[in-house]
Image (cartoon, rainbow, N blue to C red; front, side, top):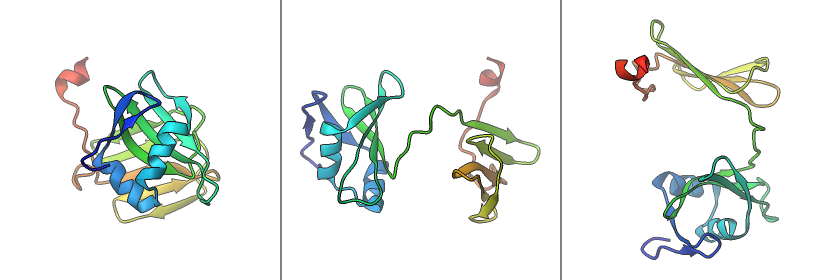
Length: 157
């Protein structure tokens, strides 16, 4: 898509790809042609008025569904691409940071953890029967893995 920014006939807007999506496409074997076909012909599910998932089954792939997370603004901005995609069914993700222990817990559901995987000292993944249940990040701030800073003015709001 480089210099020639395509226009989506479906949405009547230019299509723009983030750097993140270009990296994810390469890792997942999703070509620009497939992504453009997905945008033009895939099924749509709304997360909000401007945030949508566009997904489609491709018969020659074993990791179906292929999905693009898209922001509809002045352009169609493709934020990321996903494979073997499933919509989570409206579950709420919860994040909790304990500054005293410098531990960040990202909880995806309340299901029982049946196995833990340590990617390294800092990143530990709790698996449920269905998939990832939680991610625990040790020494989150110290390791630079806690990018969110909440100032006193936001805390007071």
